[in-house]
Length: 251
Length: 316
Image (cartoon, rainbow over all chains, first blue to last red; front, top):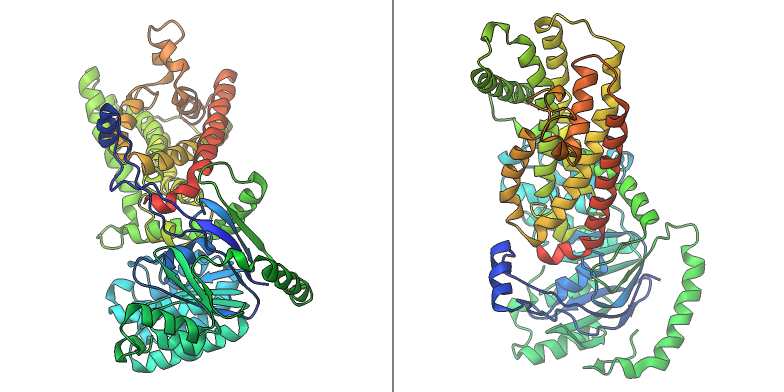
């Protein structure tokens, strides 16, 4: 059993920049600057063990919100999420990195940020370095890296966390063609060992290839929960774009 | 879960089917998951409200290596592009002490040549206050400046201000030898065992700072302006505390003594100075009052922080 979620309605009170001044001014006018964003409304679905769930939807549909809520970052405003297992989210690539430190030091930092122990990080340090394959740059500060190298390192740290539940949010277009192949292989390997996987993507092709279950979210509402093909068909029909070359582009 | 397409909003109607499926899943996994890491996370509604303290503390302890590495890396990277490098950890507070020394000497009309003990006293108080100041101001910005760490990762947020306090503590430690040498050279007083008692007051200071850092960190999420007020607030607080002036300056018969009674720094900085600078055993009331302030600050600050932290991710 991986994830069982009864319902989340997630609202946020939102001010552009909350300051004392705006608060006082608002108080003077007797207003309350509360804007509710119904990011997700009454979603209910289950994710049994062994599922790899694709999440599709337009920009701003609430896909990332959903994934972040499952990862425990955002608190649901109503409803309940139950997650059994250790979550690793590839939505947090390179989080916690310090650009003035070397790649090696950042591997430790990134690994600890993902919730590993020092021993676990030390164990994997070599694998991570091999996987990132950035040679001598491993011992240079991150500021000297090209953006591709930083992504490679971040991705390498992210995929070596042995998660029970894997969450991937878009943007896995890390590095050059060769690295992409390697990344795709590693992803497949991870999916086999993970108890469940969430894949958020606009690339419908990869959803169809990698997932065995799918949900389509639109404006915070669950439209369809079904097998990937049915979802994709409905979604593309809805968008009226058809499966053209653009949406089929891989990852 | 593949019972064909369940269309818009029809999810709830599928109730009975679902329930039966759930049960089968549960019983299946019972066998599968035994022996595997089986952490159950339940996220429920409610933005405010305290999390359960026990698991929260366990979580904080479990994730502490990250906080300490985070803090260590920030110290390591802070001065990488300067000539003097980490020497600045000592240079900075020492230069600041010299600045205040000049100010004090001019205001009191003291002779600079005989100012050795004054400089030592200022170093003693100022170094500790710098720890406090650094902890509170970086703790205040730790959540709002946390960026992707807060919005993309799940961990007990209290680690952010605590890491800030740790950073300040480790920036403070290298200044201690400077003071000890100054004391030996400038005041001609030998070191005494009483100086060890200052560790207690250092501990109080760390705990007190942690509470205030957590409080300010949470407060700044709601009022960003708090961060701009803070430096002035902390500066005034320093002048009101026995940092630049000795504890004996304001005794029970002084007209400002009432103010000192509500100033936590009076007992913490005062006790620190008594033990470390004067090599005397600080009066017992400083021990007790300081402890009281530290505990109150830490409990109140961290509870306030914890009760609000679920709201942080959407607000930064």
